Image 1 (cartoon, one colour):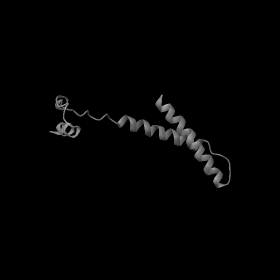
Image 2 (cartoon, rainbow, N blue to C red):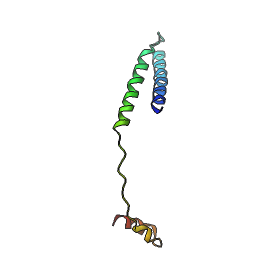
Image 3 (cartoon, one colour):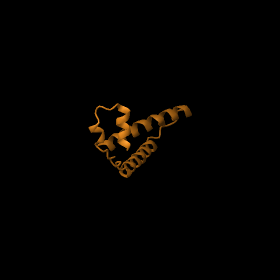
Length: 82
């Protein structure tokens, strides 16, 4: 579903860019196929990029900072690293 949203917005935005650039050039006939092809390519790149992303490993935090509730905050933070 999220890729359909990416495709929708890519088509919409690239069609707008196509219209603006066509208007700046003098207003000839609009080419509707090129922005759609570019949007599909962009969506494929987004899908591939999403597939290659892996979640980061969770950082283990020891529970020493829970024992020292009365210490100032900077000492609690230092205790996390030692």
